[in-house]
Length: 129
Image (cartoon, rainbow, N blue to C red; front, side):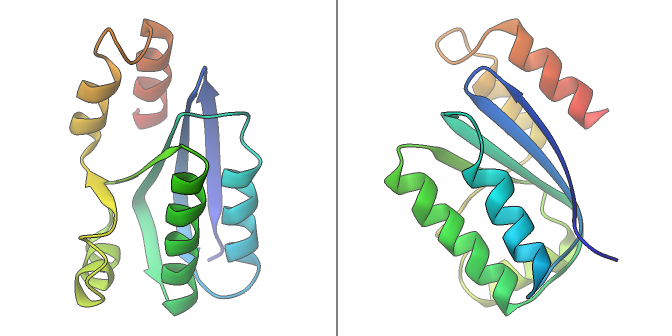
């Protein structure tokens, strides 16, 4: 199974729903391009619920994206990592590097009046459904 990314951006919030394998090869370039090519996001949410495999290359790409987003003033949030992804992040002690949240946490943050309009809330709810 390869990597599939469903991307939705509303305003300055981008939601990328990932499914499959984030492993060395084309998948890494696909993920990088999906994030780097976004149109001026303030927040990038990577939903990792359906990611079945993550290898060293995938971990490296997540670290790259963390640094790239931080250097560009963008918040990167990892949401609902699958058990395998969570275990890989724990084993490599990267849980202290990434902002890992549940979808409820992200919706709560994004739905506060200072962060977003109702359009973003609706977009995230559609992506979750």
